[in-house]
Image (cartoon, rainbow, N blue to C red; front, side):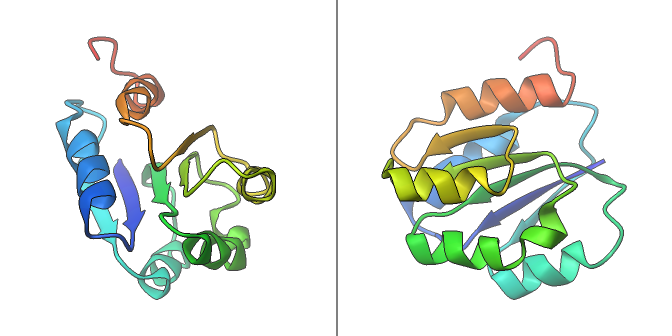
Length: 126
């Protein structure tokens, strides 16, 4: 199985989240597929996704979230961990429309993301 990680943000937030993802030790993941553009992510999701265990999507900005909303049909059947840029009601409502399994915010320390990923991947030691 593969894990898809989408992050346009190559600065502190994106790097921090990528380190958390890569720190997960599990036999369930063969590869972490990194996508830095919505076009790259969209192309990947147009291929079969039977080998995708989880998608971690970082919306570091509201524009990132709007991009994700534009491809919501492609991510509809994925197990998603979504990171939102802020806690505004409208942002949260938009995020929930993507039907994530777990939702958090860009200003978190991502410890919960590691825990949720471990559970989703069946890693009992994490």
